[in-house]
Length: 386
Image 1 (cartoon, rainbow, N blue to C red):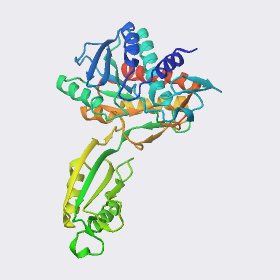
Image 2 (image 1 turned 90 degrees about the vertical axis):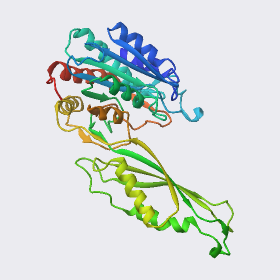
Image 3 (image 1 turned 30 degrees about the vertical axis):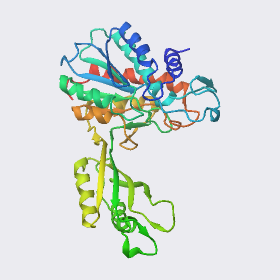
Image 4 (image 1 turned 90 degrees about the horizontal axis):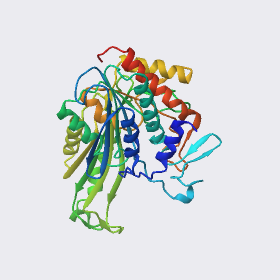
Protein backbone atom coordinates (compact mmCIF):
# COMPACT_ATOMS: atom_id res chain seq x y z
CA UNK A 1 0.00 0.00 0.00
CA UNK A 2 1.38 3.41 -0.97
CA UNK A 3 2.23 5.94 1.74
CA UNK A 4 -0.43 8.41 0.61
CA UNK A 5 -3.13 5.74 0.45
CA UNK A 6 -2.26 4.48 3.91
CA UNK A 7 -2.30 7.98 5.43
CA UNK A 8 -5.56 8.90 3.69
CA UNK A 9 -7.18 5.76 5.09
CA UNK A 10 -5.90 6.62 8.57
CA UNK A 11 -7.42 10.10 8.30
CA UNK A 12 -10.77 8.90 6.97
CA UNK A 13 -11.01 6.47 9.89
CA UNK A 14 -11.04 9.46 12.25
CA UNK A 15 -14.66 10.78 12.22
CA UNK A 16 -13.68 14.46 12.21
CA UNK A 17 -17.10 15.99 11.58
CA UNK A 18 -16.65 19.75 11.79
CA UNK A 19 -15.31 21.24 14.03
CA UNK A 20 -13.99 18.04 15.66
CA UNK A 21 -10.49 17.23 14.43
CA UNK A 22 -10.65 13.73 15.99
CA UNK A 23 -6.87 13.48 16.25
CA UNK A 24 -6.04 14.07 12.59
CA UNK A 25 -3.73 17.02 13.23
CA UNK A 26 -1.88 15.27 16.04
CA UNK A 27 -1.14 12.39 13.68
CA UNK A 28 0.06 14.78 10.98
CA UNK A 29 2.10 16.93 13.37
CA UNK A 30 3.95 13.86 14.59
CA UNK A 31 4.96 12.98 11.06
CA UNK A 32 5.95 16.52 10.10
CA UNK A 33 8.00 17.03 13.28
CA UNK A 34 9.87 13.82 12.47
CA UNK A 35 10.58 15.34 9.03
CA UNK A 36 12.09 18.46 10.58
CA UNK A 37 9.08 20.80 10.63
CA UNK A 38 8.43 23.14 13.54
CA UNK A 39 4.79 22.64 14.54
CA UNK A 40 2.55 25.09 16.34
CA UNK A 41 -0.93 24.16 17.51
CA UNK A 42 -3.24 27.18 17.35
CA UNK A 43 -6.46 26.34 19.15
CA UNK A 44 -9.38 28.76 19.25
CA UNK A 45 -12.53 27.63 21.01
CA UNK A 46 -13.35 24.12 19.84
CA UNK A 47 -11.28 24.48 16.67
CA UNK A 48 -7.82 22.98 16.10
CA UNK A 49 -5.38 24.61 13.70
CA UNK A 50 -1.90 23.34 12.84
CA UNK A 51 0.91 25.56 11.52
CA UNK A 52 4.00 23.58 10.49
CA UNK A 53 7.08 25.24 8.98
CA UNK A 54 10.27 23.87 7.42
CA UNK A 55 13.17 26.23 6.70
CA UNK A 56 14.08 29.56 8.28
CA UNK A 57 12.58 30.59 11.58
CA UNK A 58 8.90 31.26 12.25
CA UNK A 59 8.08 34.85 11.30
CA UNK A 60 11.38 35.51 9.54
CA UNK A 61 11.43 36.70 5.93
CA UNK A 62 14.31 34.36 4.98
CA UNK A 63 13.05 33.97 1.45
CA UNK A 64 9.64 33.24 -0.02
CA UNK A 65 7.11 31.17 1.93
CA UNK A 66 4.95 28.59 0.20
CA UNK A 67 1.91 27.43 2.18
CA UNK A 68 -0.02 24.20 1.64
CA UNK A 69 -3.51 24.96 2.95
CA UNK A 70 -6.08 22.35 3.89
CA UNK A 71 -8.68 21.19 6.38
CA UNK A 72 -9.12 18.04 8.42
CA UNK A 73 -12.84 18.46 9.16
CA UNK A 74 -15.57 16.90 7.03
CA UNK A 75 -19.29 17.40 6.58
CA UNK A 76 -21.68 14.98 8.31
CA UNK A 77 -22.12 11.72 6.38
CA UNK A 78 -25.92 11.78 6.37
CA UNK A 79 -27.86 8.52 6.77
CA UNK A 80 -25.26 5.80 7.15
CA UNK A 81 -27.62 3.21 5.75
CA UNK A 82 -27.52 5.14 2.46
CA UNK A 83 -23.80 4.42 2.11
CA UNK A 84 -22.59 1.23 0.45
CA UNK A 85 -20.01 0.98 3.26
CA UNK A 86 -19.41 2.78 6.55
CA UNK A 87 -18.38 6.37 5.73
CA UNK A 88 -15.62 6.25 8.38
CA UNK A 89 -14.29 2.82 7.46
CA UNK A 90 -12.29 3.42 4.28
CA UNK A 91 -12.91 0.81 1.63
CA UNK A 92 -11.40 0.27 -1.81
CA UNK A 93 -13.67 -1.08 -4.53
CA UNK A 94 -12.62 -1.36 -8.18
CA UNK A 95 -9.69 1.03 -7.80
CA UNK A 96 -11.69 3.67 -5.93
CA UNK A 97 -11.31 4.67 -2.27
CA UNK A 98 -14.61 5.38 -0.50
CA UNK A 99 -15.15 7.29 2.73
CA UNK A 100 -16.19 10.69 4.04
CA UNK A 101 -13.38 13.12 3.26
CA UNK A 102 -11.74 10.98 0.59
CA UNK A 103 -11.98 13.85 -1.91
CA UNK A 104 -12.80 16.78 0.39
CA UNK A 105 -10.11 16.87 1.50
CA UNK A 106 -8.26 14.20 3.43
CA UNK A 107 -6.76 12.84 0.23
CA UNK A 108 -5.17 16.21 -0.54
CA UNK A 109 -4.05 16.66 3.07
CA UNK A 110 -2.35 13.27 3.02
CA UNK A 111 -0.71 14.14 -0.30
CA UNK A 112 0.50 17.46 1.16
CA UNK A 113 2.15 15.59 4.03
CA UNK A 114 3.85 13.02 1.80
CA UNK A 115 5.08 15.72 -0.60
CA UNK A 116 6.33 17.87 2.29
CA UNK A 117 8.19 14.93 3.84
CA UNK A 118 9.83 14.07 0.53
CA UNK A 119 10.80 17.68 -0.17
CA UNK A 120 12.33 18.19 3.29
CA UNK A 121 14.32 14.97 3.01
CA UNK A 122 15.64 15.80 -0.47
CA UNK A 123 16.33 19.51 0.18
CA UNK A 124 17.06 19.99 3.87
CA UNK A 125 18.79 23.36 3.30
CA UNK A 126 16.33 24.81 0.80
CA UNK A 127 15.81 28.55 0.53
CA UNK A 128 12.65 30.09 1.90
CA UNK A 129 10.03 28.23 3.90
CA UNK A 130 7.62 25.41 3.18
CA UNK A 131 4.59 25.52 5.46
CA UNK A 132 1.50 23.43 6.05
CA UNK A 133 -1.60 25.10 7.49
CA UNK A 134 -4.55 22.92 8.52
CA UNK A 135 -7.82 23.74 10.25
CA UNK A 136 -10.83 21.81 11.57
CA UNK A 137 -13.22 24.72 10.84
CA UNK A 138 -13.57 24.90 7.06
CA UNK A 139 -16.82 23.01 6.61
CA UNK A 140 -18.52 24.76 9.55
CA UNK A 141 -18.77 28.38 10.62
CA UNK A 142 -15.21 29.19 9.50
CA UNK A 143 -14.80 31.64 12.37
CA UNK A 144 -12.09 30.11 14.56
CA UNK A 145 -10.14 28.45 11.79
CA UNK A 146 -8.08 30.07 9.04
CA UNK A 147 -9.92 33.36 9.55
CA UNK A 148 -8.54 33.61 13.12
CA UNK A 149 -5.13 32.27 12.11
CA UNK A 150 -4.84 34.86 9.33
CA UNK A 151 -5.54 37.60 11.88
CA UNK A 152 -2.80 36.22 14.09
CA UNK A 153 -0.39 36.07 11.16
CA UNK A 154 -1.15 39.70 10.35
CA UNK A 155 -0.27 40.68 13.92
CA UNK A 156 2.94 38.64 13.85
CA UNK A 157 3.99 39.90 10.45
CA UNK A 158 4.17 36.43 8.90
CA UNK A 159 5.22 36.62 5.27
CA UNK A 160 3.18 34.30 3.06
CA UNK A 161 4.05 34.62 -0.62
CA UNK A 162 2.27 31.70 -2.27
CA UNK A 163 -0.54 29.40 -1.19
CA UNK A 164 -1.73 26.12 -2.71
CA UNK A 165 -5.12 24.99 -1.41
CA UNK A 166 -5.93 21.31 -1.85
CA UNK A 167 -9.66 21.73 -2.43
CA UNK A 168 -11.05 19.23 -4.96
CA UNK A 169 -11.01 21.37 -8.08
CA UNK A 170 -10.61 18.90 -10.95
CA UNK A 171 -13.76 18.25 -12.98
CA UNK A 172 -13.25 15.08 -15.05
CA UNK A 173 -9.60 14.12 -14.63
CA UNK A 174 -6.86 15.06 -12.21
CA UNK A 175 -5.29 18.40 -13.10
CA UNK A 176 -7.82 19.54 -15.71
CA UNK A 177 -8.70 22.71 -13.77
CA UNK A 178 -6.61 25.36 -12.04
CA UNK A 179 -8.56 27.65 -9.77
CA UNK A 180 -6.97 31.12 -9.79
CA UNK A 181 -9.53 32.98 -7.73
CA UNK A 182 -12.90 32.84 -6.04
CA UNK A 183 -15.92 35.09 -5.90
CA UNK A 184 -16.80 36.89 -2.71
CA UNK A 185 -19.83 35.78 -0.71
CA UNK A 186 -22.14 38.16 1.12
CA UNK A 187 -25.31 36.96 2.87
CA UNK A 188 -28.20 39.02 4.22
CA UNK A 189 -31.14 38.50 6.52
CA UNK A 190 -33.81 41.04 5.62
CA UNK A 191 -36.75 41.74 7.92
CA UNK A 192 -39.58 43.83 6.51
CA UNK A 193 -42.08 45.09 9.07
CA UNK A 194 -45.78 45.62 8.39
CA UNK A 195 -48.99 45.55 10.44
CA UNK A 196 -50.79 42.28 11.07
CA UNK A 197 -54.52 42.15 10.42
CA UNK A 198 -57.49 40.31 8.98
CA UNK A 199 -57.39 39.61 5.25
CA UNK A 200 -60.95 40.94 4.94
CA UNK A 201 -59.80 44.35 6.20
CA UNK A 202 -56.59 45.16 4.31
CA UNK A 203 -57.15 48.86 4.97
CA UNK A 204 -56.49 48.20 8.65
CA UNK A 205 -53.21 46.34 8.01
CA UNK A 206 -49.96 46.72 6.09
CA UNK A 207 -48.93 43.56 4.27
CA UNK A 208 -45.10 43.32 4.30
CA UNK A 209 -45.17 40.66 1.57
CA UNK A 210 -46.95 42.97 -0.86
CA UNK A 211 -44.77 45.91 0.17
CA UNK A 212 -41.51 43.99 -0.30
CA UNK A 213 -42.28 42.24 -3.60
CA UNK A 214 -41.39 45.15 -5.95
CA UNK A 215 -38.10 45.74 -4.14
CA UNK A 216 -37.22 42.03 -4.11
CA UNK A 217 -38.07 41.77 -7.78
CA UNK A 218 -35.78 44.71 -8.54
CA UNK A 219 -32.96 43.21 -6.48
CA UNK A 220 -33.27 39.84 -8.22
CA UNK A 221 -33.44 41.36 -11.72
CA UNK A 222 -30.60 43.82 -11.33
CA UNK A 223 -27.57 43.37 -13.57
CA UNK A 224 -24.77 44.26 -11.20
CA UNK A 225 -21.87 44.16 -13.66
CA UNK A 226 -20.56 42.48 -16.81
CA UNK A 227 -18.06 40.25 -15.05
CA UNK A 228 -14.37 40.72 -14.28
CA UNK A 229 -11.66 39.02 -16.34
CA UNK A 230 -12.31 35.29 -15.76
CA UNK A 231 -15.06 36.00 -13.18
CA UNK A 232 -18.75 35.72 -14.12
CA UNK A 233 -21.11 38.64 -13.45
CA UNK A 234 -22.14 39.28 -9.85
CA UNK A 235 -25.31 37.41 -8.91
CA UNK A 236 -27.95 37.91 -6.19
CA UNK A 237 -30.08 34.92 -5.27
CA UNK A 238 -33.03 34.91 -2.85
CA UNK A 239 -32.82 31.64 -0.96
CA UNK A 240 -35.59 31.79 1.64
CA UNK A 241 -38.82 33.72 2.21
CA UNK A 242 -40.82 33.36 5.44
CA UNK A 243 -43.93 35.17 6.62
CA UNK A 244 -47.35 34.62 8.07
CA UNK A 245 -48.92 32.64 10.89
CA UNK A 246 -49.90 29.63 8.83
CA UNK A 247 -53.50 30.81 8.62
CA UNK A 248 -55.02 31.87 5.31
CA UNK A 249 -57.06 34.70 6.85
CA UNK A 250 -54.27 36.62 8.59
CA UNK A 251 -52.15 39.33 6.96
CA UNK A 252 -48.62 38.84 8.36
CA UNK A 253 -46.96 41.51 10.40
CA UNK A 254 -43.45 40.64 9.32
CA UNK A 255 -41.58 39.15 6.37
CA UNK A 256 -38.15 37.53 6.62
CA UNK A 257 -36.02 37.07 3.51
CA UNK A 258 -32.59 35.48 3.11
CA UNK A 259 -30.46 36.29 0.10
CA UNK A 260 -26.84 35.93 -1.01
CA UNK A 261 -24.57 37.78 -3.39
CA UNK A 262 -21.68 36.03 -5.13
CA UNK A 263 -19.56 38.86 -6.45
CA UNK A 264 -16.41 39.53 -8.43
CA UNK A 265 -13.58 42.03 -7.80
CA UNK A 266 -15.65 44.89 -9.23
CA UNK A 267 -17.15 45.15 -5.74
CA UNK A 268 -16.33 45.21 -2.04
CA UNK A 269 -18.86 43.98 0.49
CA UNK A 270 -19.59 47.40 1.93
CA UNK A 271 -20.41 48.78 -1.54
CA UNK A 272 -22.96 46.03 -2.15
CA UNK A 273 -24.45 46.55 1.30
CA UNK A 274 -24.95 50.25 0.58
CA UNK A 275 -26.51 49.54 -2.83
CA UNK A 276 -29.02 47.06 -1.39
CA UNK A 277 -29.94 49.29 1.52
CA UNK A 278 -30.46 52.28 -0.77
CA UNK A 279 -32.76 50.28 -3.05
CA UNK A 280 -34.87 49.03 -0.14
CA UNK A 281 -35.10 52.53 1.29
CA UNK A 282 -36.17 53.92 -2.08
CA UNK A 283 -39.19 51.61 -1.92
CA UNK A 284 -40.21 53.09 1.41
CA UNK A 285 -39.89 49.87 3.37
CA UNK A 286 -39.68 49.64 7.14
CA UNK A 287 -36.84 47.14 7.24
CA UNK A 288 -33.78 45.79 9.01
CA UNK A 289 -30.80 44.16 7.30
CA UNK A 290 -28.25 41.93 9.01
CA UNK A 291 -25.19 41.14 6.91
CA UNK A 292 -22.68 38.29 7.07
CA UNK A 293 -19.47 38.68 5.08
CA UNK A 294 -18.07 35.25 4.26
CA UNK A 295 -15.10 36.63 2.36
CA UNK A 296 -14.04 39.08 -0.31
CA UNK A 297 -13.19 37.88 -3.82
CA UNK A 298 -9.58 37.18 -4.67
CA UNK A 299 -7.72 36.76 -7.93
CA UNK A 300 -4.19 35.61 -8.60
CA UNK A 301 -2.80 37.36 -11.70
CA UNK A 302 -0.23 35.91 -14.04
CA UNK A 303 3.02 35.30 -12.18
CA UNK A 304 5.43 32.60 -10.96
CA UNK A 305 2.80 30.55 -9.09
CA UNK A 306 0.16 30.54 -11.78
CA UNK A 307 2.73 29.85 -14.49
CA UNK A 308 4.31 26.94 -12.57
CA UNK A 309 0.90 25.43 -11.77
CA UNK A 310 -0.18 25.60 -15.41
CA UNK A 311 2.96 23.78 -16.54
CA UNK A 312 2.79 21.10 -13.83
CA UNK A 313 -0.90 20.38 -14.35
CA UNK A 314 -0.41 20.13 -18.11
CA UNK A 315 2.17 17.40 -17.52
CA UNK A 316 -0.23 15.39 -15.33
CA UNK A 317 -3.46 15.99 -17.27
CA UNK A 318 -1.93 15.84 -20.75
CA UNK A 319 -3.28 19.28 -21.68
CA UNK A 320 -3.26 22.81 -20.32
CA UNK A 321 -5.80 23.16 -17.49
CA UNK A 322 -8.87 25.34 -17.59
CA UNK A 323 -8.15 28.41 -15.44
CA UNK A 324 -11.25 29.19 -13.44
CA UNK A 325 -12.65 31.39 -10.67
CA UNK A 326 -15.90 29.42 -10.30
CA UNK A 327 -17.29 27.42 -7.45
CA UNK A 328 -18.15 28.46 -3.92
CA UNK A 329 -15.68 29.67 -1.32
CA UNK A 330 -12.56 28.24 0.31
CA UNK A 331 -10.24 29.17 3.14
CA UNK A 332 -7.94 30.84 0.61
CA UNK A 333 -10.27 33.85 0.96
CA UNK A 334 -8.68 34.51 4.37
CA UNK A 335 -5.09 34.06 3.16
CA UNK A 336 -5.30 36.18 -0.01
CA UNK A 337 -5.82 39.49 1.91
CA UNK A 338 -2.38 38.98 3.48
CA UNK A 339 -0.93 39.77 0.05
CA UNK A 340 -0.57 36.08 -0.83
CA UNK A 341 -1.01 34.67 -4.32
CA UNK A 342 -3.45 31.75 -4.02
CA UNK A 343 -4.39 28.86 -6.28
CA UNK A 344 -6.42 25.70 -5.73
CA UNK A 345 -5.47 22.28 -7.05
CA UNK A 346 -6.97 18.97 -6.00
CA UNK A 347 -8.75 15.79 -7.03
CA UNK A 348 -11.99 15.36 -8.96
CA UNK A 349 -14.91 16.95 -7.13
CA UNK A 350 -17.83 14.91 -8.51
CA UNK A 351 -18.60 13.11 -5.22
CA UNK A 352 -17.86 15.74 -2.58
CA UNK A 353 -20.44 16.12 0.20
CA UNK A 354 -22.37 13.20 -1.33
CA UNK A 355 -23.18 9.72 -0.11
CA UNK A 356 -20.34 7.34 -1.08
CA UNK A 357 -17.77 10.13 -1.43
CA UNK A 358 -14.73 8.75 -3.20
CA UNK A 359 -11.43 9.36 -4.93
CA UNK A 360 -9.65 7.33 -7.57
CA UNK A 361 -6.70 5.49 -6.06
CA UNK A 362 -4.64 6.29 -9.16
CA UNK A 363 -5.39 10.00 -8.78
CA UNK A 364 -4.65 9.89 -5.07
CA UNK A 365 -1.29 8.26 -5.67
CA UNK A 366 -0.43 10.90 -8.29
CA UNK A 367 -1.24 13.84 -6.00
CA UNK A 368 2.01 13.83 -3.95
CA UNK A 369 4.06 13.94 -7.16
CA UNK A 370 1.97 16.86 -8.43
CA UNK A 371 2.34 18.84 -5.21
CA UNK A 372 6.04 18.00 -4.93
CA UNK A 373 6.67 19.24 -8.48
CA UNK A 374 4.98 22.53 -7.58
CA UNK A 375 6.92 22.88 -4.34
CA UNK A 376 10.23 22.31 -6.11
CA UNK A 377 9.40 24.79 -8.86
CA UNK A 378 8.47 27.50 -6.39
CA UNK A 379 11.18 27.07 -3.76
CA UNK A 380 14.05 25.80 -5.94
CA UNK A 381 13.48 27.50 -9.31
CA UNK A 382 11.09 30.43 -9.00
CA UNK A 383 12.35 33.97 -8.35
CA UNK A 384 12.37 35.04 -4.70
CA UNK A 385 9.63 37.65 -5.20
CA UNK A 386 5.98 37.36 -6.17
